[in-house]
Image (cartoon, rainbow, N blue to C red; front, side):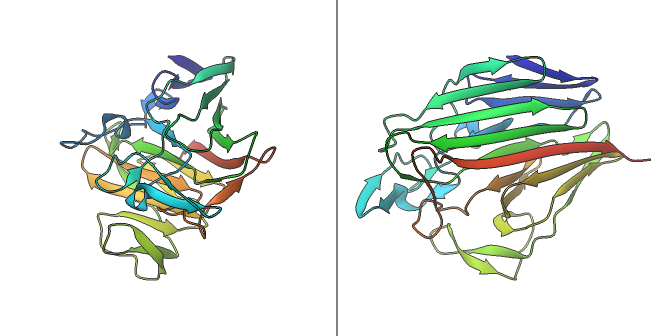
Length: 266
C-alpha cells in the first residue's frame, strides 16, 4: 500500500488491485467507503475509488464498432461489458514521493487495440487530485474513462448530504442502458447518469467535500445503505458508441481529471 500525506490528511493507494484509492482520511475522518457485493457481483467494483478504462459503465451487448470493424469484449454484467478492464489488475509504480504517485498498466489482450493507462494521484493541503490518461502509441482507438468512488453514508456521526443538481438525466431504455438526456431527473434512489456541468458537494456535518471534474457527465448510485457513488465519466454508459467515445491517437491520449477538495464549516 502506498501512503500519501499532507499535514493531518492521508490517502492510501493500492497498486495491486486496480490502482485504487483505498482510503482518504481528512483530519483523521475516513470518507472513502464501499458496500457488500451482491450475489454474483464483482467484488472489486464495491470498494474504494478505482479508475475505469478503456471504457466506463456498460458497453451494450459487450460489442462496439470502430473504423468499420466490430469488436467484442468480455461479458461481466449480464449481456454487457462493464467498468473497463483494469479495476482488478496490478499497476506498476512509475514514481512516488510523500505527496504523489504515478501508476501505469498495459491494457490486456481482451482489448483489441493494445495501449496503456496511467494514473497520477496527488495529495495537497486541501485537495486530492486524480488524473487518468489512456493512450495508444501505435494506432487510434475509442475510449471512455471514469472514476468510481465510493463514499461513506456517515462520517464522525454525521449523515451524508449530497448536493447534486443536474440539468438532465440520460433516460434508460429497455436494455438497461441509457439514451439521450431528458429533463425528468427520475425517482430516487438514483442509479443514473446525468448532465451536471457544476460541482457536486457532499456534506457530513461541518465537513464539506467538493467534487470537480473535466467532464459534465456524472453517474450517481445510491441504492445500497452502506455506501454511495458519485462518478465522473467522459461519456455516458455505452461510451464506446461512435457518437460518445473519445478517440485516443498516438501522442494524444484521452484524459479525465477529478479533484476532491475539502473544507470545515463553522
